[in-house]
Length: 117
Image 1 (cartoon, rainbow, N blue to C red):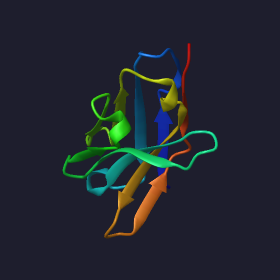
Image 2 (cartoon, one colour):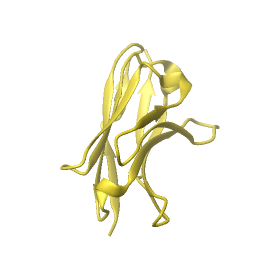
Image 3 (cartoon, rainbow, N blue to C red):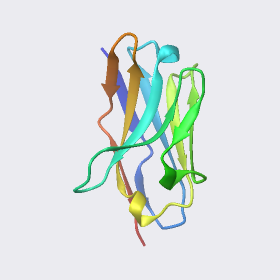
Image 4 (cartoon, helix red, strand yellow):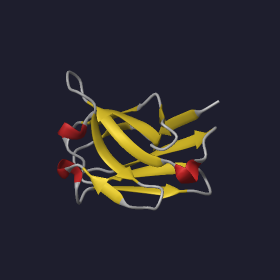
């Protein structure tokens, strides 16, 4: 049974930091690309950051320089360090695991991040 479990969300003031974690089970973690997506109220889900199985990263423009994605293959966990948070970062953040060759794509249930004073 595949599980992706996000944690670390919460309420933070503008300018603050949070670190999200996504712990996985039931997949061969090392061969999956991992991504963090977010969905704000009334908006479509968007890719925030991704990291390949080889460690290459990419970010959406609005978070470059503020967010850092990383992975720990031994712990089967992916992280999203979020600094200098802004109210527009408020959203539900979802973890995704994808393996294109095997046509596998799995999602977590999400964790809410609220940036507000």
